[in-house]
Length: 147
Ligand code: AMP
Image 1 (cartoon, helix red, strand yellow):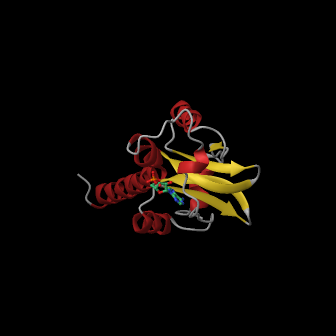
Image 2: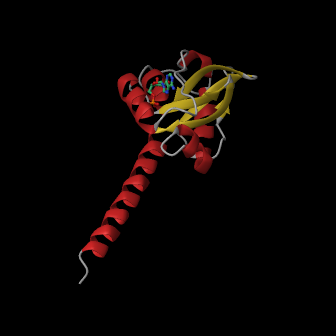
Image 3: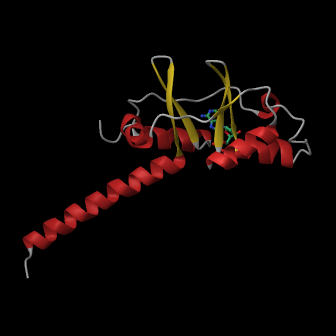
């Protein structure tokens, strides 16, 4: 379905960068930087136990004076993970992100992790959709008013 989370994942792929709760924050930051992402899903085997984003590092490590080399991920992650399903629309995701002040949403389908959408993914898709709309209108106007 166009305009859904499923259609974003079709283009973007289903990979989700993850980390274990007992790994250090230092390792987590390294992983984010290497993969050029702003969040890691914290997983204990197959179980989602939290989410860690750059913002957690800023708030709970940099600002509170913890050491990233000795602090485990579980100490600074967010426990209650908000997620969506593949059938959710882009507008649904934007509304959730705005209301909860978050920029990352894991996607769960029938209990299985199938991907993650970020605010960046949504903006990219909205911009592409707008461009299609503009091109269509431009073609229409050009066709209607020749010369
Ligand atoms: P973000 O804006 O995504 O960097 O996240 C801001 C704060 O919300 C951080 O404390 C994150 O751990 C938390 N957070 C981000 N995404 C989620 C999510 N899907 N569910 C729960 N908490 C989240």
